[in-house]
Length: 287
Ligand SMILES: [Ca+2]
Ligand SMILES: [Ca+2]
Ligand SMILES: [Ca+2]
Image (cartoon, rainbow, N blue to C red; front, top):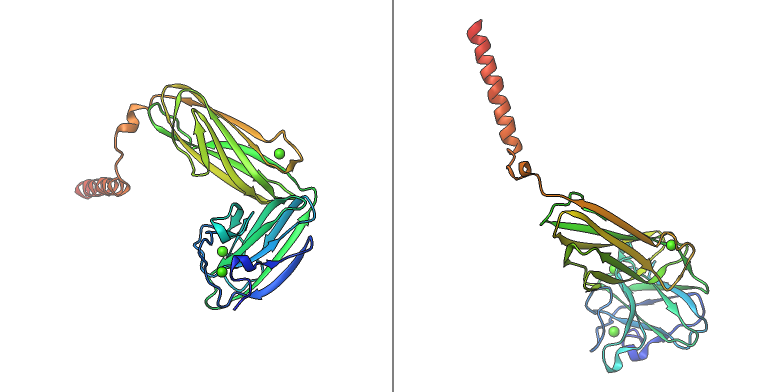
C-alpha cells in the first residue's frame, strides 16, 4: 500500500527540479478527493510542496509512468472539504495519456498534487518537476469565422490563442466583444458574458500549442458584423502587438436560389445516364 494514498499523508517534494518514482498499486479514492483532468478519482496518490522557495513557474509531468495518468494541483489538500484547484490535466498530447501541468509559484507557497489514473495493470508512476524563475511566453490571438453571413442565420466565430513559447502561458484570459447587430447564442463553459462582451478563462496554453474558443451568434441585420478579440496571460509576453485580432463580416440576405433544394448526387447520375441512353437509342434508330 502506498503511504501517500490519503491526501493528509502526502509525500513532501523538495528542490526546484526533481523526479520521484513509485507504485500506485492498492491506491484508492478517498472522500472529498477531487476530479482531476475531468476524471473521477479512482487510485489517487498525493504529493506536495510546502514553503516553495521561489516565485516563478513550475512544470509537473508524469512522463515515464506505466499507466494513463491524470494530474491535479490544489492549494490545499482535501481533508476538510473540496480543495481549491489551481490547474489539472488528463492527456498532454504525448503517448500513453500522460499528463503535464504548469502553474505559477509564490515564495512560501504550498501546492498539493493529485496523481491518479487507471492503475489496474501496470501501476508504476514517475513524477517529474522543473522550475523557471522568469517565464516568458508569446501568445497571439486570431479570430476567424464560419464563412457565409446571412441575415437571421447562425454564424460561428473561432477565437484561437497560440503560444510560441518558450514557456507556458498560465491563467490565459480571452475577451471577445461583438458589435451590436448580433445575438449571442452559445459560448464554451469556460466563458461568461455581459451583454455582447464574452470573457473566457482558458487556463494554461502550453508552448507550441493552440486553444480555440467557438462562439455562435445570430446575425440580426444586414450590414457589417464585427468582433474584436484580445488575449492576456499572467506570464510575461515577449510581443504584445499580436495579442488582439478583429474581424468584420458583410451580412447579406440569403440569395433565394439557395432555398431551392438541389438534386442529390445519385439523382444527377441517374439523369445523366438517362440522357446517354436516350442519345444511344436515337443513334441506333438512325443506323
Ligand atoms: Ca488515494
Ligand atoms: Ca491521461
Ligand atoms: Ca504576444
